[in-house]
Length: 62
Image (cartoon, rainbow, N blue to C red; front, side, top):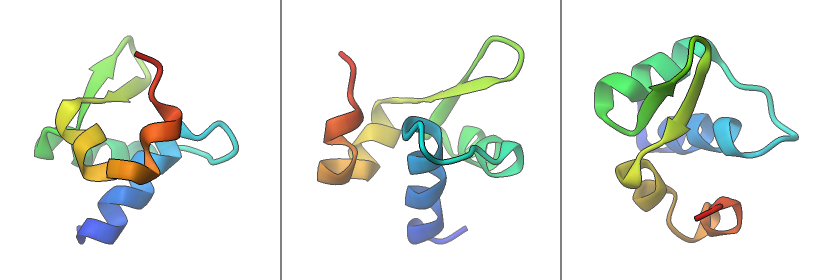
């Protein structure tokens, strides 16, 4: 998975207008960029937000 693909997968998680891919989210878990939440959800870790950088800043909730 390239860095561009990682960013796209992270944006799929945080942008409500995009649909999440479970396979890509699972790959991000292995890389430490997302963590599993509940049975079927994922959320970006600090490393994931850092990878998004300025593109992800608008999606931060904390």
